Length: 214
Image 1 (tube, rainbow, N blue to C red):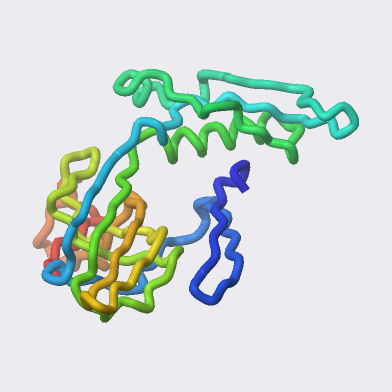
Image 2: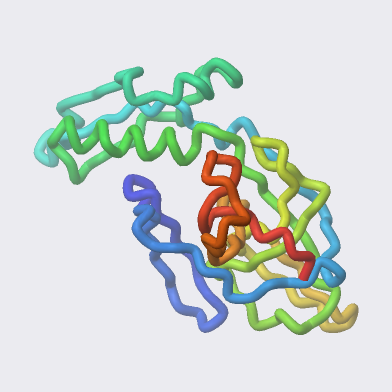
């Protein structure tokens, strides 16, 4: 699964879930959690999770049990990230057993460094009600966490958070969530082209963050 940027977990129905994160699917929030009902527990970014250069082994020889080829081309590294954080590679080269084509490997290197070349927020928070106790691992929720900022300095307002674990506390009438920031957020559906906006690049048609405090 790691070669495909996938994840594996057991959901609330005891089903084994396999997900492939190929970037082709859209994150859709299953629910918006009101700001007044959220309590932030902790948030952290770990340099350990950074990958801005991705050495790779490929063309596996099943007869000898060895990889025939290796590449660590800096052309497909995130040089801007390296300038800030230094060169960050996985603990061992990515192992692409399934691939023998260098071009495909270079494409995957570019995808990996683009996705993991910046620190990702790992967030623990509590829903101070039991209204969202049905949320499961793998779901995406929209939440406002104003004490956290993205890499451009924007507060995480209506940010899309992918849930990793859920712990209902029925005695305290709350639910503990752990999740990761997807880097995405709720947006306004669009703007009326009625002359109220200058098309000078100062606004984004359909891509502006929804800053409504739900």
